[in-house]
Amino acid sequence: MARRTFIAGNWKMNTTLDEAVALAGGVVEAVKGVSDVEVAICVPYISLQAVSQVIKGTNVKLGAQDVHWEASGAYTGKISTSMLKSVGVTYVIIGHSEQRQYFGETDESVNKKTKATLATGLLPILCIGETLAEREGGKMDSVLETQLRGGYAGISKEDALKITIAYEPVWAIGTGKTATSQQANDAHVFIRKVLASIYDEQTAQAIVIQYGGSMKPDNAKELLAQPDVDGGLIGGAALKADSFKGIVIPN
Ligand code: 13P
Image (cartoon, rainbow, N blue to C red):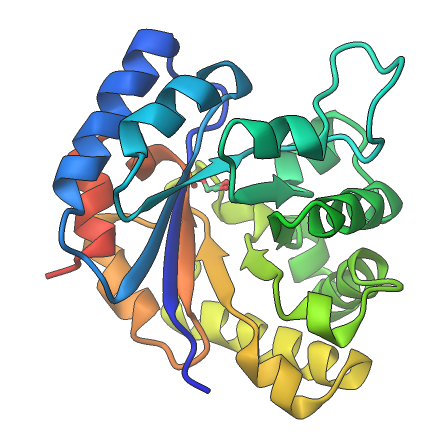
């Protein structure tokens, strides 16, 4: 089964409501008519509803940047999967390295969020990636394997196929330091190997794996040309419709 290219913008903690509406409108315009690439924008919670109206009926899907695993209750400040669904969300980023680094995200919480997201019929984008120290210390494979086994614990094969993986080496995020296309592809091949050992080869080959970390119009083409790189999770370059377009439609 051929894997479809999937480019998602992660706006992180950027854009006010007005700015989000304007940027979403720009993205809709920029990727109009694109049918061979799945396109999503993952916007701040407070702009989800408005952006959902802007992209209604277009080829741009809506994503959130995190979620809580409980269905409802006394969890001040948290947002549930059904709340996200009610405003038209399709994708949910889970386990981003910034969540792991700054807000105590663990493989266990990633797993709970992933299960809750799937149970509501939404699609997780599960982020994994090693730090520079881990890579240089020869621990990259074991770090990725631990994150994958933890994130996928107790998840059926059928559900695993609904999860997109974003491989984001922490040292490449927001640093301008992109992984080489070879480094990205090698990591993706390794990720597929772990997925094959958790599930089977066919499942591993069907799962979409995005690369994330300083992907920009001028390096997207080469990264996306790698056989195991199926798309991108884009931070900085997703904050301008033009540069996001340059990744969705690299020339
Ligand atoms: P940058 O594209 O800004 O490096 O961010 C990548 C990222 O973290 C996307 O989730």
